[in-house]
Image 1 (cartoon, rainbow, N blue to C red):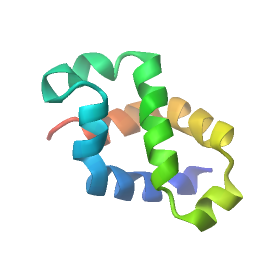
Image 2: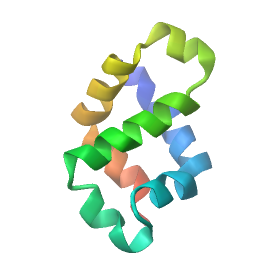
Image 3: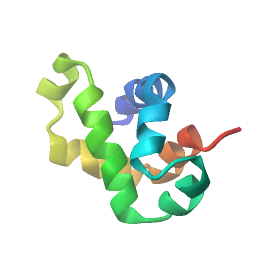
Length: 81
């Protein structure tokens, strides 16, 4: 499942604004990303944006587990440089 980081990074790059607004905006972003429920929200949003072929191969519970297991990398993608 390590190959999922590439599509995940692409989704975050293309839809960062939508994801950040779902978490309460830029001001709340860093605090929200320390919250497991916020990471699960990121997983939910990103899963719906995955290409259909990827969603056929990887079911939502597996994708959520992937995002939670790789939360540091996901947070790094979302936080401004």
